[in-house]
Amino acid sequence: MYEINFCEPTHIYFIGIGGISMSGLAEILLQEGFRISGSDIHRSSLTEQLESQGATIYYGQRASNIENDVSVVIYTAAIHPDNPEYKEAERRNIAMLTRAQLLGQLMKNYKTSIGISGTHGKTTTTSLLTQVLLETDLDPTISVGGIMPAIGGNIRVGSNKVFVTEACEYTNSFLSFFPNMEIVLNIEEDHLDFFKDIQDIRHSFHKYMQLLPAHGILVINSDIQDLDELISDLSCQIITFGSNSEFSDYSARNITFNQSACASYTVVHKKEDGSLEDLGRIELSIPGMHNVSNSLSVIALARELGLSMETIARGLHKFTGTNRRFEKKGERNGVTIIDDYAHHPQEITATLNTAQNYPHREIWCVFQPHTYTRTFSLMDDFAKALSLADHVVLADIYAARETNTLGISSKDLQKKLLDLGTDAYYFPSFEEIQKFLLKNCINGDLLITMGAGDIVIIGENLLKQ
Image (cartoon, rainbow, N blue to C red; front, top):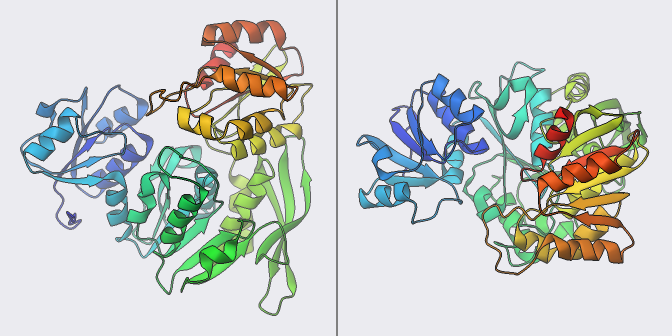
């Protein structure tokens, strides 16, 4: 595999440079003195940001975009061998690396490299940890899968002391990484267009944990099913967090919620002799019980970095969220409009449970399923999770990288919901959904647009009317 020499910057080309992760990596390399060019289908704020920093961006993907002095081409799983730029790089025998392989090589340049993994919660937890680290003089370099206001985007280029990144399991990307500290938040069924089943997913996470050296540190959720099976052969230090203080090194008690559904709790640490130590009170500024769990993982890892509880608590309290994570978009005629990225049954459950603690008359969930395989494989789980809302409005399935070979549609999910006794509707266009909501949502209702596609547009359009 081609190895980038970070002491001798060259010309690197990105196919699909406008993606949230690809743009972040390109920005890091720009700061390291590399010449960066790349392509994307559409102009965006991310591509414009890169252009302002000196990158050359082509809109439209053509073989001619790849200049003669390009030393290596970076691509993602979304790029197929018939892509004209991919084919041109192969024809000219230009070295090629996946996004994950590049990220792995970057991690080697830092004294402490932290990978944050899990089926869900990665972006929020990475952002929580980032906010805590910003309270210190560690000057971290950050790559996060969402827009974080505190760093003005999805990337922060700091010193070579600490590197923090999300570690995604899809296509086994995280197996190309070189972390010496890891957080594993949860392991659930997902990405079944790639993994065979939950055991295949667990096997992949186990291999990821095995990447840690003997001096490395694993912070892992003790609520993960059959945890011992995953960690019994690891040589690294293992620290647990979870809902039960008996089985966890870090847990929470005396949990309360404010009127915005944000939790406060007392951190409990189980010492080596088994006694419980009260580490103080934490006040979160992001809603939901699931974020209590996410924040516990950050506390555990931050203490291993030598940070004080005062610093950790201050950072956690300052974090107010990233885009599309229970993000309040505004109010219209007394209806509060929230947007959330949830696209997995566990995430939907967490978001709708959070909504129960938020001021509301009735909860309307406008859901856009994400990928045909996920919808087909987890249909019953989706219906059960969505039934936590008073009313569900379904949009067409967002295809993303797939074609509909399964003959499935949102109407199938609507039928499941109706069978459960949930008030459920389906409309084939956003325009029809918007008209329906304008007619039926009333003062005091909470409207949540939900999904990993472009469903956010509906709430934004409603606020303009």
